[in-house]
Amino acid sequence: MQWKNKPSAILIGLLLIHVIAHIDRNMLLSFSPQITKELGLNNQQYGFLTGAVWVLSFGLMALFMGSLADRFSRTRVMAFGVLVWSACTAASGYAHNFEQMVAARFLVATGEAALVPAAISLLSELFTAQRRSTAVGVFFIGIPLGIGLAFVIAGTLGTTLGWRHTFLALGTVGALITLPLVWLEDERAGAESAERGAHFVLQVRAVWAALQGSRPLRQTIIGFVLVHFAFAGLSFVQLWLVRERSMDGASMARQMGALQILFGTLGAVLGGVASDRLSRRFAGGHATVLALMVLVCAPLMLAYRFAPPGSALFYVGMCAGFFLPLACYGPSNALIQALTPTSMRSTITGATMMLINVLAIALGNLAVGALSDRLAAGGSAAALSTALVATDVLVGLALWFYWRAANANASAALPLDAGPARLASINRSSVGHQ
Image (cartoon, rainbow, N blue to C red):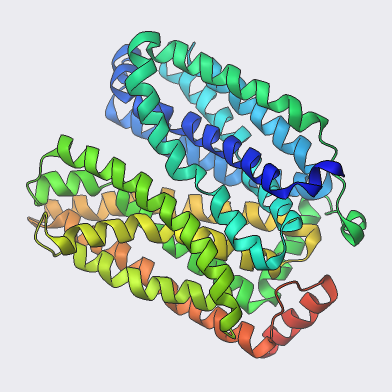
């Protein structure tokens, strides 16, 4: 296909769509005071909207949408997802009560679940293994840019348009993006054209068999999930800084927003570029680079909890927490794609996103809240500090799993571009090393 001869242009286009996805996703947060007041939402209802509604829809649908992307046109699966989430973003602007907003946000998450699995599979085909981690890292710049721009839009256009018309405008922009995606015929390159995924149930079984049969694949995904407990901690950071570090909430919100955009973006880019370059020097490839990044950042994140507020170590540790999760996206996804047969690459990405959202983000947030509440009820003056240290320890545990994946890769002599037959051989070899 002609458009596949322009991988950089496709990457920029996918990045733009990813940015819009995260703007739409976080617009509810950026307009939270206005929306909760106008709809009469209490904190529990607002937390349900931003937590359970989103995570359960996105997490579970990512697996299903991934299987569709392995069976059918990836570009049209993405177009369908963009159209659904854009229409429901616009519909969010017409919500007049809690139930209507729940329905709209549930379907926004369902639509957005189609993007990442299909996009990662497509990028893995368009870019060589030597550039794949960089490309995926650039794609995930959409997370920090989308979060930051959501608050910028709310603070600028929101004052004139109001939250309802802003949602409608964003939905209209997203709907227009579906047009070029619909016209792009997705023909899988070379032998891949004959390797489409099976029906959903069979594909899920195949993914489960791949996870059971490949120790490095399983350990890479576990490490990737553990790194995301940094986001569970991030949800409570502002409360921790105000309640237990006696810092000004408004001032820290501004600083954290700017630092999140800066170091999240640096993490996504530098993590991908560094991994593509350094992985060639290590026998364990991308997994070794991932282990080294956790080894450097995790102790700084832990030290941040005990550092004097405003000190150099305090800010270095905070920025390490913003940097590390995004830095892991490029190399983790590149390695997962390399360890997975082409016929299930979108499905395995969807399964990974499901595990991240359900285990690390949904249950992680719930666990931090429950643990801190129990400690506070017992008279602890450092309830949130203790709970957040626990999330940092879980992030640090990713080092063990990435390192074991690196050892397994090294012993199997995993090539960067492993074909299906070679992958099967590596997977059988990894079973013998368990």
